Amino acid sequence: MGRRALRRIDPALDLSQHLKHVEELPQPLMLQALCRVAGPLELEVGSGKGLFLATASGQCPTRNFIGCEISRKYARFAAARLARLQRPNALVVLGDAGDFFQRLPPASAAAVHVYFPDPWWKKRHRRRRILQPPFLHQVERVLADHGLLHFWTDVHEYHQTALADIAAATNLQGPFHVPEQPAESDMDFRTHFERRVRLHGTDVWRVQFRKP
Image (tube, rainbow, N blue to C red; front, side, top):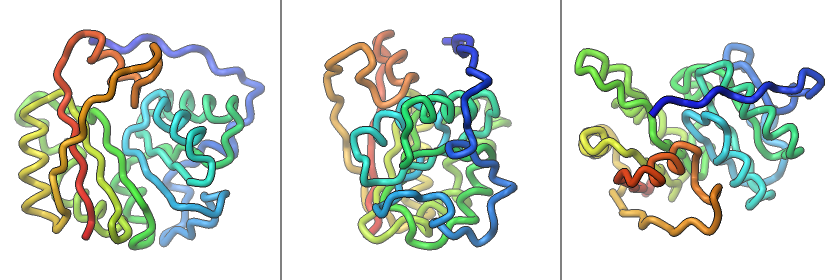
């Protein structure tokens, strides 16, 4: 399933409060520089068009949401969405998620969301998958006590491999099954990709893990 072309971003739209570049962030990072509401922080890896960030930040205005997206055009698109909605509690970091997570202080996030990451289908490319032990160590470090890792995929092999790596590389508790919720509208999905795969009748494996 190929991605549709993105809509043009209004050049007059100010993205400065909703788009940051990972290489411009200090290390270690002071979260006060990014979080503009006095509430917990949730992180998304691979924000795509930003549907999760836009929905979650509207539903939970007292929480901070930061998405990390390696594609410049998608990071800008997601940031523009947040800017149009005037969401002070959400932004997008453009860059590699591993680099971004290394800059975050320990126990700083209430949740990490990883929805439909690139499966890198060819065997020789699987080392590029985001849910590898080095990154999983960073996820565990960044999660606060009782923090949650949410992982959804439509690739059963990736689901099984990731679960094995999480069990071997971390002390996170789980996996806990997450039941599918019926959509109440055409856009009532966690991400645009979830909407597409469910409309095509594709199976989705949803689990979460908890830091003890």
